[in-house]
Image (cartoon, rainbow, N blue to C red; front, side):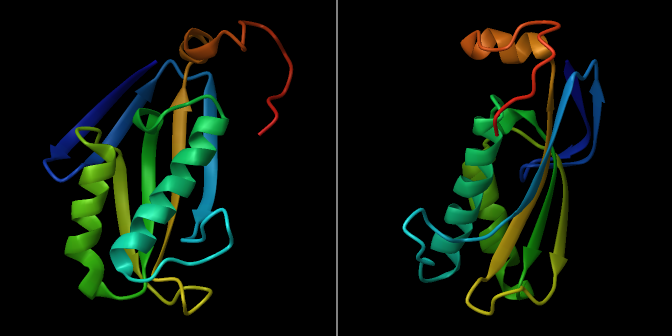
Length: 144
């Protein structure tokens, strides 16, 4: 599989992501800032890190990594979080730059300051190389 970033921005996003030779595509539902213990962290930075951790956890359960993200949509409850969101996204993704959309909107629960959804893609070869659990032509569904 190959991901070609189109018009990459230095702040961890690209204007487009051309994905070639894909065998697996994962659509991740919007991840909210709720920890495993059911609590919502206080403040935007902590909530943003939690939502990213939740997104990456789902990606990893599918046998992928954050570098397999090809599209991310971030829903912010207020535009004042734009810069902090960008800083934390860059901290989490490093040099990886998926296509990105940020939407300022009301969030389902007023306690949540953001929600993040994503699309990841990879090849079966890549999945097999990571842990050996998937093989070409296995034909079985993954337990996500």
